[in-house]
Length: 84
Image (cartoon, rainbow, N blue to C red; front, side, top):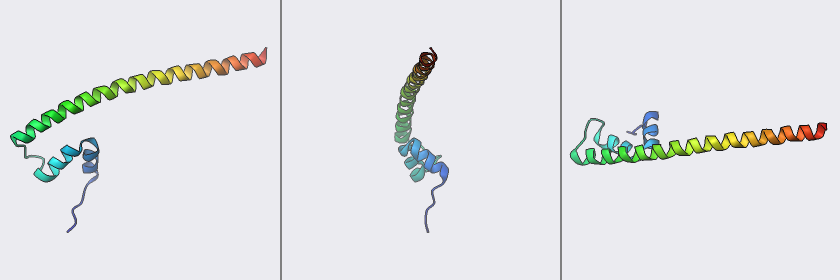
């Protein structure tokens, strides 16, 4: 008999392979003391990772705004140069 993996399991694996592995082998409701400690460490890790990604995303948005502004300034400057 083949074991099937659902789309939600693939999503869980992409987010955190350790979480997926734990739920796959031990079930969603089973949490031992060791597993609880690792889950807590994983939560802290993901909180830190998410915070870093938000900072990077904000930086990328600012860079995009600056790039668009410079591009518009060059286009407008070129049009004005050609008109006069």
